[in-house]
Image (cartoon, rainbow, N blue to C red; front, side, top):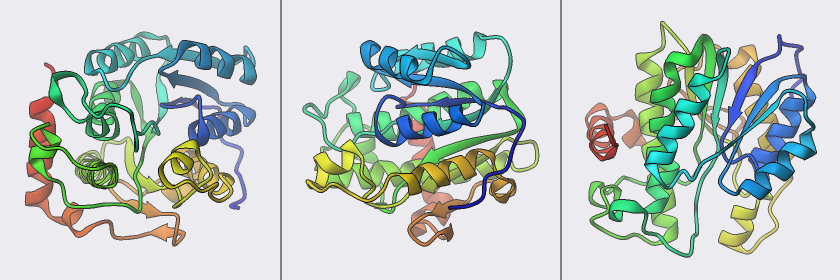
Length: 269
């Protein structure tokens, strides 16, 4: 595990902070003295998480990221609070769900894994400090994006939808990161490590998974450490422990532009 520095306290928003990697990352960052803004879909779980961390330097926000109007409301609520946001960690994700259809006939995996973090990031950029970070949770599972499936015109199985939605996120992270390379904030995508011991992994693959601490450590580093200061638009693969090349499609400007245009066409005004 990388040695931790003692940074100036930051204000950090973590989506999907009531379970798994999001919860453990929230606990770790709060223990370092940072103000943590917790997002969750379930009010009771969010209340329990807030109580677990304690009353100081913790705020809680409820939103269902499969509903884009609620994503907009979440962004408005965060932007309206006093003070700036230093770090956004787009952690929330879906692999398997009882119903794959979101509002408007869209695939809920694409909505939560791709559209919601894109929309939240775009709306919060004016509130994020130029020296801040946006850390997007990618995956080693990446597959070429079917634009029809992204738009809800075709259905994919769980593995296909997850891999495509994570590549789409990696594609826009790279493009947006490079666009903001000079002015900031740093926007980076991170594979926190394959088969971590999260509820998602257990539900998807029926295995316990590996120690979640490795994922917590890389998210802490991506959010705070100097090693990520020059990582705008890059992809960090924690399976290999280094910055690496994502799926080739993410390096293809034409393919990336097509995916980003499709994303933007699906978002509300």
